[in-house]
Length: 250
Image 1 (cartoon, rainbow, N blue to C red):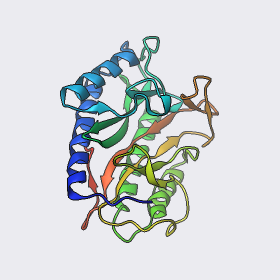
Image 2 (image 1 turned 30 degrees about the horizontal axis):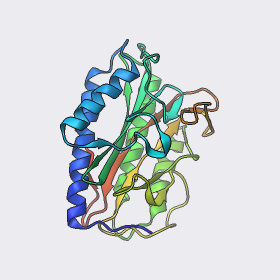
Image 3 (image 1 turned 180 degrees about the horizontal axis):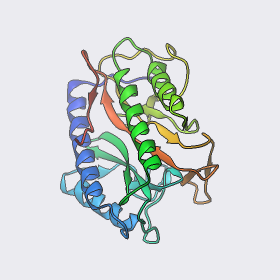
Image 4 (image 1 turned 90 degrees about the horizontal axis):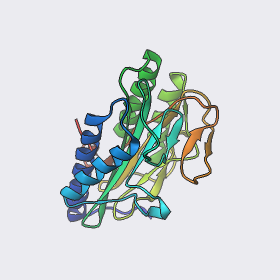
């Protein structure tokens, strides 16, 4: 069942999403060669708690951290660690959720570490553009797969693949609500979008194959061919005239 949010519920999600955006900005500001992903986790927790929020990921289905830090060929769910030290030329995807008064904001961004090759910059640019093309389709009377199709067509027309094992989703009181929002599929399918729905739209884009493997820790997911992957995400409100990005940080 897709939940239509009340005005009061949306206000709480706006606040949660503002904290998400602030935490992501704080992390982006310190990412540089030699920092560990555990240090990024600590910065996120400080921002979230100082603003009256709670990390949405920590403990969710047993996940052990407040953010996900996925480096290079890691697609999603990388676990922050003191032993993972970022290096010049890496990319790191930060996925972060916040609970505020029972409601959640959720977003992700892939950040370069120092100088990265031009082909890697292109991957990040295409993935972020795919996110915004998907968001443009999040309007009343469209269907869920209109978002999916816009993302897939753009990504594949640029020579990359979309991950199929993980999808976007509704978000609100729960981190994962209906509907599921794949990053692939034909247009005009799935539930009709209605004003007041809140969606986490999140293309995960691979340089090579769409196939992924989950590592022995049960969480960290890497590309099966070892090539790079990028991930961008926003929490979006389906509003009357145009979609509203709740987690926008710039």
